Length: 275
Image (cartoon, helix red, strand yellow):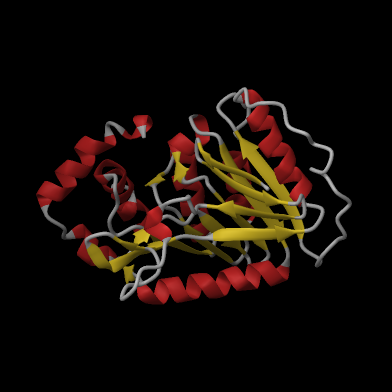
């Protein structure tokens, strides 16, 4: 078994045949406690961590195992006996999987360009969740362009966060997005840590990258793109359930938020390139 949690990446590989990637950390915040929901946070029994992971079985696991070994070597880990790391694994299912290992040394940020490409080519629907929403100008403009050409764009974003700065900066983009027709929902009674998206019910990405600058230029991340109707439909169903439990942001009400809040957003936005 190979496991990695750190620098953004979260990887678990078992026997070279099964892998898990996503946003879940090895943390007590995710454990099940009596008389509380799964992942309840100490002192906040009504809240829990909302996260998403992807289990992969089959030959695609080799991509993730290779990424783990590359990172292990780069971090000067001791030599490993790799004789059984890459067994012959039979194909399972008809989905196509591609693993994206993003790192600061990359000349082209793989997750970033892949995500932008998916948004730009979407035809019907984009559903996206992220723990930290600090988008680049291109990400904002591409979401707006998608909504204006008739694509249903829905964002599941945190209602509260361990980073007030990131939360405030993210909200400074709401008005422009809402005016273009993007639908925004904020989670309630939970800590959103999921990093996932589904486009047109057939293109899915799940991993450790947030929709923010840090994931693009600073962090080592791992994300898996899945092409297939089965995974896409499971993701669509998951998002539908999440949106039902979240609070929709109304444009008119958002425009009427306190002036002090608007000033705070403008001030915090000056720091967005450091997030």
